[in-house]
Length: 298
View (tube, rainbow, N blue to C red):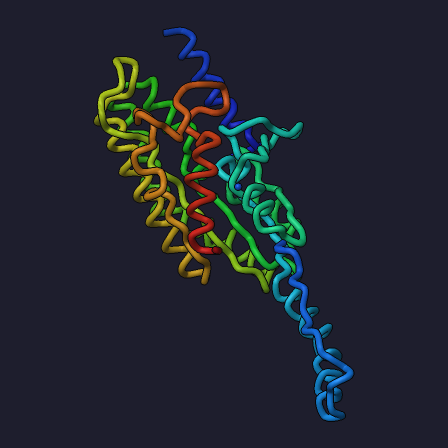
């Protein structure tokens, strides 16, 4: 499908606003043990000398092992849309997203953040993987939601009839099972080619909604249910292709459970802004995505 970075998402979400107005190093550990030279025998002195000579090599090896060169790829759920504030690019990157939060907490050797709001798989392949290299040791990504028509489906369900919503969801489900797997395979393959020594971690998307009553302006329980069911299907597809690529899949749904739209403490924005709608807020990135990533990385 034709795409320009963020254009589809912005266009659809601008429509949302218009309609609404109308109605994420440890410091090197000092090593070495004191010896008493005056009391040491010749053999003991030799042993201490050997240990001293070996210590720098051991420390250097440990530092090399601990070095993390991290690249965060993906779409708006990686760039941090919903958390703000954003950089000056059209990608709407936020330092409150899980990726920069994780990088800061783990004292990485290097961190690149090409994730971009509105990105589809082709954008990752054609642009974002350029940030990868043989020295990259960790890659995270969220991708696939925009390919499956995330913004259009949400718009159709939020402001369209029940039948319009159902049709949009069914089209997205058909795409997710028929076309998306090949696109994900190509994306993960491109990442593997550019970063052969990296651990690839694929994070999924949360369910967006709770099903309890939350006011007369909210989507119906039926619409919220079929959207959550579509999110479950998307998670299944992404998990399957990630496994086939030898990647680690991180299911974020359990972390957001009880914090979707219509919750007492939501971590997903409702129609609260032009770009933030139906994206995690700062709590969602920290307590949802970052917590999920920490669970597999430590």
